[in-house]
Amino acid sequence: MTATAATGPAVDAATAERLAEALRCVTISREDPAETDDSQFVRLAAHLERSFPLVHERLELETFGHSRLYTWAGTEEDTADSADRPPAAAILLAHLDVVPVDDEAGWTHPPFAGVVDDEFIWGRGAIDDKSRAVALLEAVEAALAAGVRPRRTVYLALGHDEEVFGDGGAVRMARRLRELGVRADLLLDEGGVITHGVADGVDRPVATIMVGEKGYATVRLSVWAVGGHSSMPGRRTAVGRLARAVARVQEHPFPLRMTPVTADMLARIRMFMSEPRRTALGLSRVAGPAILRVLALRPQTEAMVRTTTAPTVIHGGVKANVLPQRAEALVNFRILPGDSVDAVLAHCRRVIKDREVAVELVGMSSEPSPARSPGPWFETIAELARAVVPGIAVTSGLVPGATDSRHYDDLAETRCNFAPIVLTAADLERIHGTDERLSRENYGRLLEFNRRLVEHLAR
Image (tube, rainbow, N blue to C red; front, top):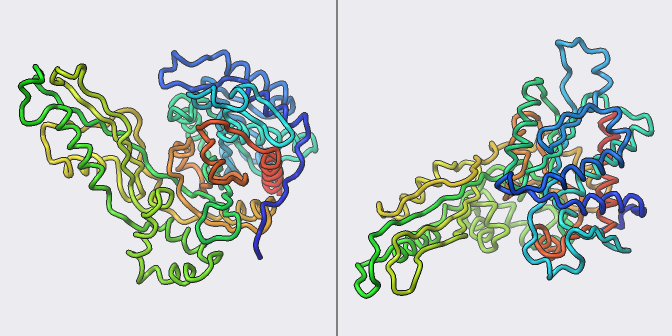
């Protein structure tokens, strides 16, 4: 059977407007907290409290900066001894902050206008990630109104600085949960979606439920030199030495490698592929090197089989006729499970082979998730996704970027990074890009998924 992107439940005007109002709050997180406009986060908090009165009346709320940790006590809490806390059902994550906008003039509608038309809800954060945050609150508010309560405790952790690595929000909320001795069945966060027309050789939408994420490191390469007049250069200027170092790092990538998660992903997706791809993937034990080389042909799939290398910033020199005294470059690595931050540094030094080039970490870094198989809740999330978008293929995967869930990784048996929205390749480019928007149909899917999730947690 060939699936279509089934029509999602209708989203009424009032529901769409609640998300749109959240998008009008300019909650841009900055690496320097002093540059963050706190008033916009206060405005968003007031909107959430007005829009979801039962959530704020009946759930316990703790704040960590502008991050919000809600505790929805389960019915088993009522009879448990205070020293014998039952395991939690779920930790449900989302984030309230967004990235800046560089090209406002290129947007169809102003990025923070929160425009709602017949087809889309427009604005920065419509996909990443206010829609998920608001949809979670919509589901809990509706459950409370219907008298529904989870059997075991559910936590909602809404971060305010995910886009700048979560130190002020997710890190503190995760620490609080550890202090409480929380251990959950499920950790659910952003990351995977349902793509349509993206997976090569698959004739239906593909839901990729991520079960972990790659690590993150930015390495600074820097060179110092004496300087002087450009008419009397030495054998290699600081810029030249740096350029050679950058070229060596890029020309000597990390080796291709099949991880257990990628093997699981391929085993699941091959059942939906046409021949000869299906048979080829079935021979992965003997054709593994060939499969790795095929995956490496496209950036989207290469990221699944190696630690990626991306030179992103370079500086050096002040004038055409002056020898530079300093030159530096930044190289970003997304680290495959099995590699490490230390391995990235060692790799850079080994391939550059130049003691005059300093190699050091800058900014935030994080290790990749521990290698793991999909947990017990994976199939439940898959079934909920199939109920919302019938006929899809479901597979596993790794988030190539960094999410708040890495801070909670040890707190749950099953980790899933997923939202049941159907996106094309063009839609994916809107995330952190121009004209970010979410169709009303997709928002309906997100609301229905969360409604079904809450219903499941109440069993």
